[in-house]
Structure formats: C-alpha cells, structure tokens
Image (tube, rainbow, N blue to C red; front, side, top):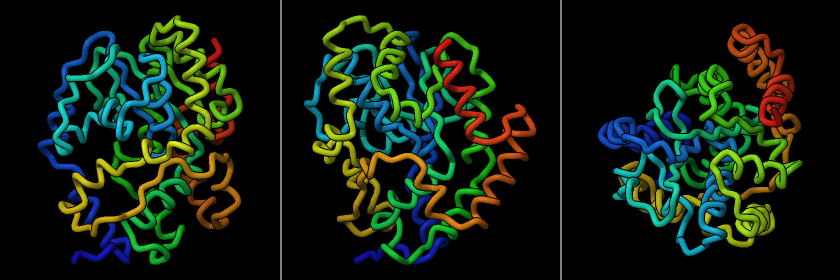
Amino acid sequence: MASRPRTINEMQAALNHFMTPEGLAKGLAFEPRKTDIFISPFAKCGTTWMQQIVHGLRTGGDMDFTEISEVVPWLEMAHDMDLDPSEQKAAPRAFKSHLTWDLIPKGGQYIVVLRDPLDALMSMYRFFEGWFFEAGCIDIETLAQYFLQRDAGRNYWDHAASWWSVRHRDDVLLLSFETMKQDLTGTVKRVADFIGIEDVDARQITLEQASFEFMKTHEVKFNDHLTSAARDAACGLPPGGTTSKVMQGKVGLGKSQITDHVRAAFDERWQATLGAQFGLADYAAFRTAVDQLARA
C-alpha cells in the first residue's frame, strides 16, 4: 500500500500528479456565459466559504449535495474528477477556481477573497497534514519555504497582484477574509448585490448556513473527500486521508504560531511584490484598501 509523504520533496512529487495537464487545459479553454460566477481566491483563503455563500444565494439554501464542489465545481479539476462543469443544478452557474486574472476564462463575474498570507500558510499546513504528508513529518518552516517558492503565477503574491490590478472592473468583487469574519451579514449582502440575488429569504438562509457553526456541523459537505477519492491513487496517496476545510474559524493564527524568521521572509516577499508595485505597506494596508473598495 502507498505511504503518505514524509518529506517536502515527496509531498511535491505527489502534488505534481494532482491536476493533469489535460484537465487544466480544459479549464482554461472554458467559455463562460455573462452570468457565470467564478470564485477564485488563492488556496486556503476562503474559497469553500464563498462557494457556500454563492450556492446558498442562488438556490435559497439548497444543501442537497455530497460535497460543495459537486454543485460548485472546481473549474481546473472538473475533468480529472469526471465532472461536467457546464451542467449545474442551479442558476446562475458558479465555479471554484484558484486562477489568476491573467489565466481565468473571461466573460463572467469574478469574486476573490484576499487573506493574510501567514494565515493562508497555517491553513494550508493543517489542510495538507494527514493528507499530502504524514502528520508531524513536515514542520511549518519547511512548508513556508514551499509556499514562498511556488512558481510565478502560482504563488500568493502573483495571485493577489493580478486581481488587485483589475479591482475597478464592474465584473470583479474583491473581499477580505477578515471582514467576512467580522461582518458576515454585510458580506452576504455585497455578494447578493453583486450577483443580482434580491430574494430576502435567500439572503437570510444563506447568512445562517454560511456561519462557522453551521458549516462545522455539516463539515463533511465542505471537505475534499470527492477530490481525494478521484485523485489519491494518481498522487500515490493511501486512502483515508483527512481533508477538513472547516477548521477553527479564527483570524491571526499565522502571526502567533510561526517563527520570526518566516515572518521576516514573508514581509520581504511582500515588500518586493505588492509593496513595490502598488505601494501597499503590508497586508493590513491591503485589507483596508480591499474593504474600502468593497464598500464603495
């Protein structure tokens, strides 16, 4: 039986088989309708949460699905999961993605959640541990280096910069993860207004079903067990890995649980990218700008 990776190199080797070139090509070639909604945060920045919000709004609270990506399919992974993303049970159609603005198919509407990269790192660590690496075998500093060294166009900073560059487009809605936590009511309203859902009852039930308590209670519907079932063998992973996405529902864990060395490396990367390109001093400044834009 296959064993779970125990080193970062073994983890990366497994991840290299997660998405096939053919599946990615089909996702990139997808032809959207004007009403299509693409939910495209960077990994571990609120994608599943926004899938639940959008699906709740468009259906009035439908929970008749095994796992959320069954009804809001991952565009780049649909082919590899034997799903047809064009066939959906609700309208408008909605899709999960992690693509940058440069790569995502154009012609729909786009919702992107931004999050503190240190918290995204911590969330990624907890998500991979027990699935893409054996629990306890890779430490947070080692995963931080993987996070920092991801290829151009596939890292946090390139992703954030690509979407911030198109922040003034009418078909793009940017939100911050932290403000979603603080003001879920306002977030649901902004998303509903953006995608044209006026139904008061749909807004209210979505608010209830997007709460941490509700999603934690129904946690199995928000993990990646369908993705795991479809791709574990190709990645050389044993079955039965843990893939929970509804963790502690907290903000700021990254700052308190990683070393000064990692924080300094993240700050240096920030200054060389988003700081140099847009004059955004740090994530706090970025969040303030995102929130001001969302309220405008």
